[in-house]
Length: 273
Length: 241
Image (cartoon, rainbow over all chains, first blue to last red; front, side, top):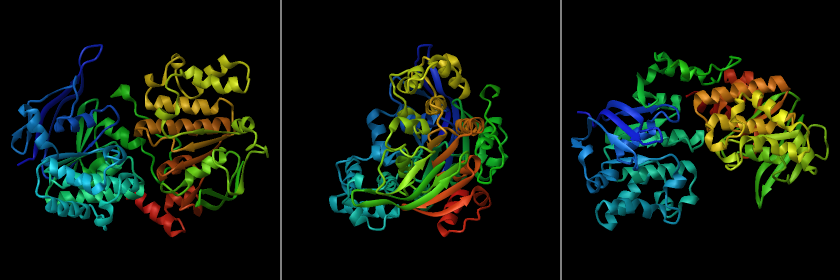
């Protein structure tokens, strides 16, 4: 059974020229797998992730024919119930750990706080689970790291701490919105490996939202390509370079290659799409 | 055109650059690659006079006193930054941004120069009196490039000029930089962590690690992955994976 079923998802914002749909009737299923969503700025990929999490701020409006997560209909959940769901059953990792961590609270405390909010366990048990979570994202000396403040961490380490905070409650679904774009190339791999690990070992569903085609192709099982609020194509991860839709092909072609010999890069003709 | 000799830079007690030396010929496009903290941006800062060398020297063009004469330096070298959202003044129109260097350097024909530059970077003339927030990321980066070229400097320092942009917009900006370089015979010094961008835009590259140059190579060696240093190979591998 699929973990998340979405049918005809729409996200609408009012504007001076009447309501504007930023996500236009999206349908997809997510099992316990790694699903990539790629697209450029403004394609609606982040809004899709936020809509599932119930994080579209007013005046934005979310409608769907179906929005089921693990047997629960998310459309009719009260705010309180949704809050219980978020964090515990589904969580989200955002782009930049510098802005997502509280700068004046020690790492260990912040992770324990996440558990306390969801009423998990006693203090000693919480501490133990916090250490385990840090170890699970491949932080070798959790004792030391738990005592640090966010500014004492590198970017890659910060992002792994964020992931540890998200997985400590063992959510069934993780939405990662550009989890590595604020990070150095050399540590991107480590962060993605920790996420990958959790999908495999705990059977978590992962939705990886990114503009980086190559990264998504490498780390996901399936890829949805979004353009102007719609899914234009679904491709298997190995088949990105055989993609059919002109938009996907245009994106792939406009990437410079390491053995580049073209004098000019082909530019996407948006009007032709 | 650019000569960096035995450059060392210290911040407090920490040495961030150790005896870095390289030359960039006129009209050449040279890349500095490495991870964050490897010192690549510090080299740009030393060249643009934002940090003082602890030891060694940097020289751009022929003017020997360029680093003490800021106006002369500005005519020799300009910089394009990573984030077009941060590098443009939010309350100043495109016209203000592009006219300011002309006013400071008391150059004539400002009106015509601004219009010519808009054409050169492929921005429609109707954008002239818009504010940055009315432009897309790619258009803003075009304004930043236009501003850098207003004084006709022979050298451009490019600090991750496309890494904040979408892939299709990145292609447009890379094409623009390449054609501007050919048209105006510019010398580029590009800082990036993106090896494919180097392959497209540069002739040679230096690989930096922890404040030292570990290898200087032709772009041909990058294309075939034939770096001689171990670290160069490591970077190449993490990039093709």
